[in-house]
Image (cartoon, rainbow, N blue to C red; front, top):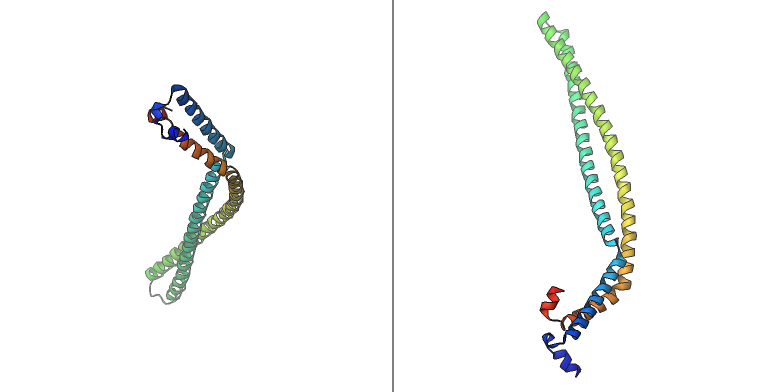
Length: 193
């Protein structure tokens, strides 16, 4: 008789049997939802922490690139300062051997321009060093935040894995029973359900 019932077409069941099967299916799915509720917000918290870590890591990479660019700029400006100092020495030596006032004025303007250019480069170097210090401090803070988030992430993952491992067997068993029960319900009723 059990075999006859298993082979029986779902449309041939009485209304009472159909309702009982639907109720049993709903109960099983509610139990599965209860198990998912047990997990709570942990899966979302884990995902949020992973996203936050990824964002902070990207920020650290960007800061590192900015610092490298600023250091490159500082080195270029130091090179220009050295070049200007060489030019100033050359112009000063040339001033000793000038023949007329116009050459002297021209060389003194060149020296003045090179000195002003050096002052500008020194100012820009100071500003760049301040920005490097600020970005280094920000990078240190971001690294600290990433480490904190990683510790939190590991804790949350362990909690989630513990809950999942405790409920996995029960959830799988309920899903299998629900799947078998779905076979005893008409497709039309199942779609409406």
